Image (cartoon, helix red, strand yellow):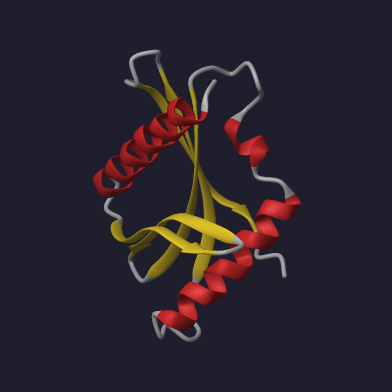
Length: 125
């Protein structure tokens, strides 16, 4: 799968994830918050809880479950950038968690399934 196809698959997955979160009552605070070492796909909030969401989009299960792609190294990067986001937003201490949102898309880019894994991992520093 070429780079442009992966990018459009990822974008379609992130768009579907944002719609899913909003339908569940989350307010989207940021999308694609970037630093040189990592990117937060979605930062959302619900009932005072800050949620950092890693979106994994797939067009098949051939390469394993999307959540399996969130390795310990990825968790460390996400933890570090989450702290950066909180500092930049002036949030100080607040309750937060890391979710993984797995999106399965068909060959046309239509959503076949969405699974939200709440508290997928603890912050790793």
